[in-house]
Image (tube, rainbow, N blue to C red; front, side, top):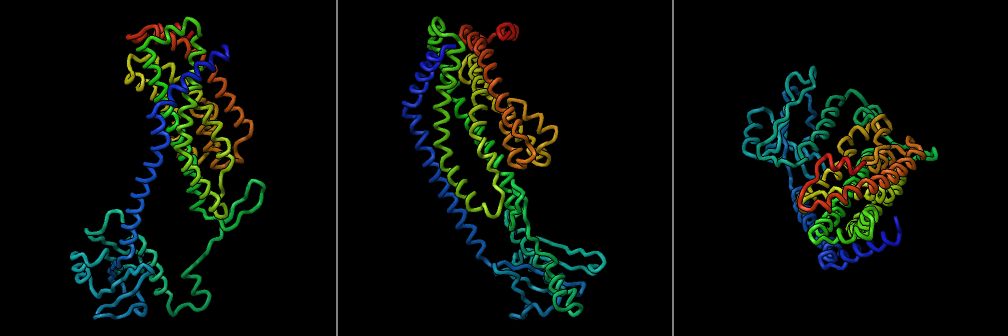
Length: 424
């Protein structure tokens, strides 16, 4: 393949796309529009949730087992009330179940908790929610830990004193840490937040990769369909080889698509980096995964993009070409479909096998580096990149033949026998 001819095709395809006003509007206007819409929606939701959080909620409690320490409750207007937490949630202590059910039916109570007669033997507490309880509200579940603490306090009142009394109420305060890459101990690690970061990053990067592929493939399919209708490629084939046309379109249109994608993701990446810097003291950031992600993105796009170009040329029209290319993008997100397995055992047989499959290697390597960077060897990372490079070269060689067949047989779909013959 002649580099100067590939560059000429790439330059032509790149300039023909980036000069369109629709491209400029989508590249620079869409992020601003999405930011404005997202900010407005987030602001409205935040205001709504803050208003709901400020509202007082009442929960009923019936103590049929007679274990609750009533000294925690204050009598107001003939009712025993207990402020459960700082959100002004209140617990009303009832003498019998019937009165509590009446208030629950009327909507005065969010939920009713009944400590039944056999509580000491079974530990069961019946929880009945009002039908007027909001579907997504978490206030009901937030009150239950407080009630557990009230029960523990009531059960040990007068039986234990001093530090032992406090330890029964609060048995343990876990100070978490994790060993860093150099063997140092990172203290004050928030395990929940750390797990969230380690699972969110590969998922987020997977969505970014899929978005980049779908965005760039749109330009690939569009230009192929246009060229088939205008017969331009039939003229080019007289002076440029199919491999050179395919490679030029791949690099030119890919550059335009990746530039657009880079602009879209700039805001998100900036926010992510800012959040990572703020959370660095509390979680373990997988910097290795973030460092190799751009390289794997480009290699993954070159491989899948070459397949998309060759496949798009086989379609009779733009809609058919789009359907044919969608399968390649779906293969790229196979690691997300088995994300639970990869998170639980990132270096198992499945993770190691998917590292060497070009369709799945970009996301698989990122996931393995995010979960446990020490479990994947450096040669596996470099090997996966080498596999992607070799696969890209092969897909361009084979795809160029299919690319030529698809253009020369305009208006018809080549048979499988013809595709196999040309691929060989």
